Image 1 (tube, helix red, strand yellow):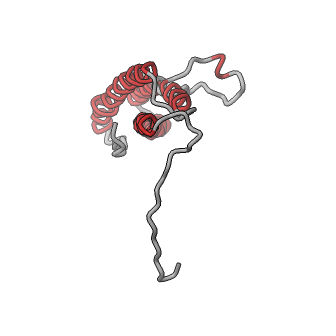
Image 2 (tube, one colour; image 1 turned 120 degrees about the vertical axis):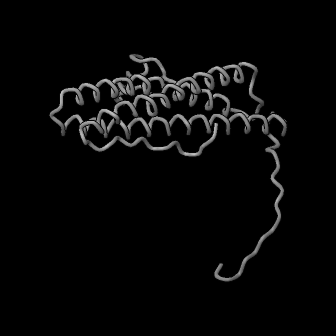
Image 3 (cartoon, one colour; image 1 turned 90 degrees about the vertical axis):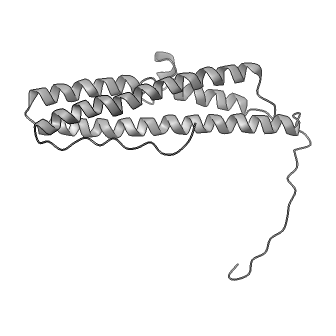
Length: 178
């Protein structure tokens, strides 16, 4: 407070009512932190796609060039398709969304994290297997998104440059790690 600083060492102990050992809880924490990183990475990919899609829609609304409009629509459709692997853009927030549409990757990662965090125990072999499978799916989805926001967007920007239209700028990924 003010100019006075006080500190004291504390020892954090495991809840004596917990059935998990300290090693179990440490393993659970490590796994949950990895899932959090994956969720943050997926959310960042959605942010990047949405930023480009907004710019594509703005270009399509402001130009009269049919080739630009078509190319914008085509790239936008590819981005939507890639984004739909991560989140379901058809969600309305209504009570029946979960029945109408299957879970997408972000929902699956969140569900897994919730299940793993429900107790103080080491992740099961099944948890680890599902986490690995979902991680592989995420890496694949991110590679596709990076290709769209790299190669395909550059192709579209080349078309824009031939018409003296400013480029679409894809945000760089946040340094979240994987």
